[in-house]
Length: 498
Image (tube, rainbow, N blue to C red; front, side, top):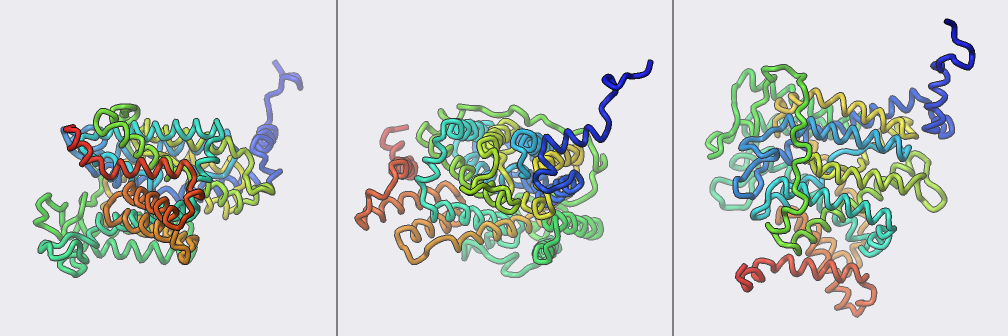
């Protein structure tokens, strides 16, 4: 039976028109083809997180009774972390595109996963589910702050210089992690100095050559403005590592460090089962929302959640404004369209990252690559999200990537974050000294929380010393007081017999 005109199925032209109208593609001066290309460019620019996130959060044991790796096992489960990392990034990027219609993609935040790994899961008694529970709490709190409008008040409470210093400090910390995990910098056998270059002060061994090649390649590609420079560098260095391992058979370094010229983590080789596999999403839901309270106490929990919140809080706003500015989407007040929806999705992404056990997800500044290639709408984010979902089937590739091939990206990302240091007024000691302490103590103490705490306390103390106590926001007073308690928590517990 023939369809009447009123019963005729929608044509391709009609569907394209609906897509155009929903995402306002033509209205924003773009095309569907441009949005698709921009979305893919963003994916290839930030796709390195699928490799790096497992190497950061998946290779460190928690400090609980059993000392388990993420997922509860006695050995790293990198493919599962890679698959879930891609899954959460895909779902949240699609949600950002559909709900907020903004060309920004989300994935596990590099600075944030370092906080979870080295400043939370490493605490006495803490387990990975406890740590991820704090991430979920942080995301839910940010969501409440967005919905109530309190976020603006907190944003204004922290001085600009301290916000900048936190990002710079995390950048230095990430770069230091990259140098240490690659073996480029390591503890000397003689213990004569805290660290040294390579092995005995020399760059000896094939793995270090892979790191140097990867670092130089990533820098050169970035200098030449090649899209996806970090991902290309990781893949190229991995191919080189696989070739070297197939010839030299170096193997992995034993725990006792008896073979320092071997690969730091995993020997690169093509997986026996192939490069494609059914994704393992067993990490989903492995979090304990309030389990950390009995382990480290309510004061420490509040401080840690605040540390996560602060790092996620301001980074997202800066990224949102930067992307909106590049895309020409900001209004007269400098706000992008659907600001509240953007922040809501970003807050949900933080909680979703914790619920998926892959750390807080956040908006990526690498989305600027897609915008630079013409993306102007949320369709680009949807394309990026779909690419992430397809990547969940390629998780076995993670086992091929040694630390030496992936860690150059950490050094480069650290550099990009440190570039913000010019935003600090170094002639004003009242803010410059707290900023300095924040930046240097993060890598020097291997703790982002310590750096932030020192900076906040120093800011309040110096303002009081300068007779400007009234300039300190009440929220800064309260936060500094909490950090004081945090720093002396050990003696307090001893005095109380805890």
